Length: 233
Image 1: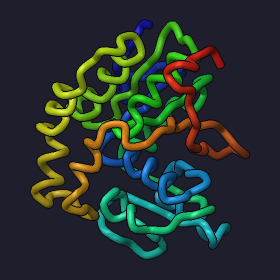
Image 2: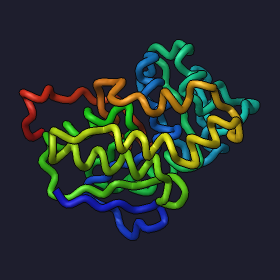
Image 3: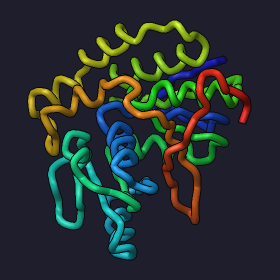
């Protein structure tokens, strides 16, 4: 499999298959939202769009980066989200990097959103599809975020080599600028457990697939085959 690793600004055309990586914290949060029962996540272009969608759908829950703000129900923190009951609900998510990256590749034939918590499921889905080439969109720090690069490279290795050891990739992510800022309380809207939760390898058994639905980019959990059942989809 031919793997490319690019930042959001380096995308000049829509790839065929894209894996959008945001470990700290957008797509760790998205995975936790599904684990807490969310039916789908709408990826908003802007804070204003997120609030407008919430106004049209009062039963939806809106989520953003940073500190709490009027109109938003939650912040972008897995540690805070894990206690929220989202059964059957739609979540609207707007973040600084992750949602931006996913929207930047919305024309791709397959868009997966990923972090370490869904790494193996993401790799299995890519294996099942049998893609010749995959573009990994490294969303943080203009494509230089160590935690996102580590996760992207780990998933790429898992697609082609089942024996890949995760320890070095997780250490690289743990030493990232994002991890330090979260641990030191620099980033608002955070929980002390956020870094550990973001580095919890394969916490969830599903991949996350984003598709266009009624002009919106919608993320849903996607069950993947077991290792014994990998086959083209």
